[in-house]
Length: 507
Picture 1 (tube, rainbow, N blue to C red):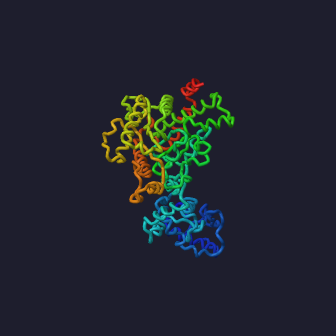
Picture 2 (cartoon, rainbow, N blue to C red; picture 1 turned 135 degrees about the horizontal axis):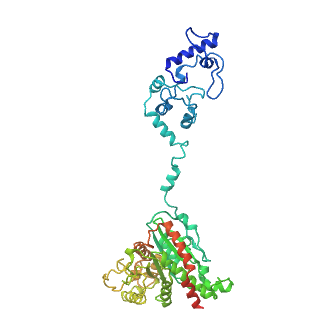
């Protein structure tokens, strides 16, 4: 083929001349001028595109059909084919390698010339629909040989997978009061979440309650709870099970934070008997234990939507003094504009305060008496009058139909209080009921003054999960953003000047 891109008949004529020249050294037909540079090109051996010479022998096998492209390679190159008279690409085979990896049967060898001009376009259009190669290229592009700009399907699938389910709690703050980052892998980039924390004295049942609210049922073995409860050995020696802050998140995107006991005597005893070195800013062990409890409480008041305060008897005035002190020392955090009204009705637009729930665990049957219940609500309301914590208006035992005979207006000063009875098996209650002297009532359960423990836990869970999810800061936080926000708050609590000054006054 001439380099100027002449028509197809000229190409066939040159092919005939070349066969005669190689066979019998005929200088060509008369009237044909082969002198000059053109003559030199004609009598030089034909070279392949990769630099090798044609093998000797007849070239009758090089029919025009071999010069045509395979069916899968026709449409797209024909659209970009150069116009007549334009330069021919030196290595068009590279385009075929990019699309087909040179592995399909029928791929022409590298030495095969690429036709151009009207004749080649006609061959390409024979038996070929224009849209077929396009679909083939798209299908090949979705395979393993896709370009780097294509999206990895594994990445798209990972975004659609459900979040990893936790089987047990992990540390958010360890026993040395250091922040842990292991909870980050369980968090997602979504904003619909609820953060629930818990506070309480030693042995009140905080871990058990958090396990029942999060992932377990009363019928399960306590050794399999997500928050490990006290073992019998720890109970006998008066120790504590939880240290620092434990983290657990459910599939419903509810974050539960279990904490070590407030003002724990076992932690104090461990510090004294094991001669643990105190931080330099604390001189006495009991001061260090109290400041640890205040730091945890102030932290929960800042990063939680709901804080549960657990008591196993009514009531300890030191608990309310402790809550008020932690409220005073909590970090200053801005509140959202639509969430500026405090529990007492005053406008405190500069601070965020969580909802607080007073949970009476291991309640006796007399505690469920309507008269005693009303007195308990009145006492808590008086003790929390000057607090900005949201201690009323978001949880009600009367609405749970626990007291069917009481009207909705019976508790005029109803606070966020809930009573849980002592956990016992149904077999124990039937045994106690059948131990009387009347065989007629031996199969009936004894009167307890309240529904079963499982029913009470279910009603409490419904009330807690239905609590308002107020905005924790001036910006809407995702789960991962909440984690980073909580880490900054914890660091600020440990370095708080107000807590340091309060610790100095305790000495």
